[in-house]
Length: 237
Image 1 (cartoon, rainbow, N blue to C red):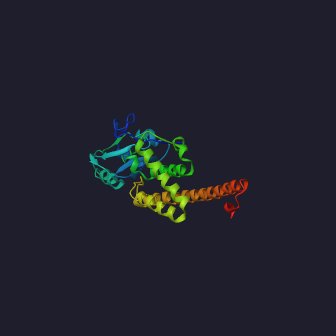
Image 2 (cartoon, rainbow, N blue to C red):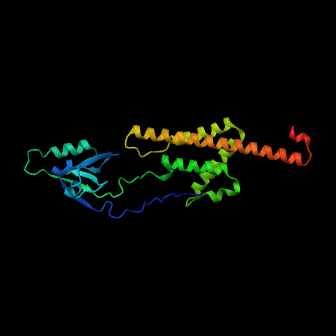
Image 3 (tube, rainbow, N blue to C red):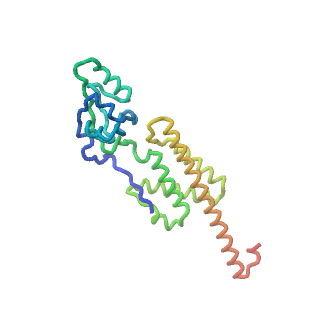
């Protein structure tokens, strides 16, 4: 069974996230490995084993500002840091604790990878008897259950009818995928993620087609066996 959780509108807070700010001497910024994540600059590593102690920074902490200038890129960090060159004080960078990294504010229903999870459950629904659906998927959201059940029903009906009908249903679901968001830090990364999800969806549909092909052959064999047992020659032609 698969459990699909739909978070409420108010996300639970992470202890200490957004509550703890601290300063790091600008001369120590080179001790940190920084990366751009969306419009934020995060700590993703350290120059050596002593850098964590020197800076008091931790993984995923966010660089908020440098010398009072708000920063949204590594270029911003360098420009603000170098603005103190030649001055008496090297200045400070303001960092914010973020133990779990950048929060994803995108609703679950709009995320591409979660869409794939729900699609996989649709395939599962399409492979089981209707009486078994309530045993293979669970959710705290009636809307999510309805989405998965309806999608699974469409896939099952299409698979029973043939490859052409199944392709039409898959194409419609792939079109829905185009409106989903991915958490890639660049356009290329988001494109790669979307293409990966599409490939997985295609493979799952191939498995579904094989399943119903085998199921159809099994049903035909059972019908023939029953016809032979009841002495019905017309049914076995």
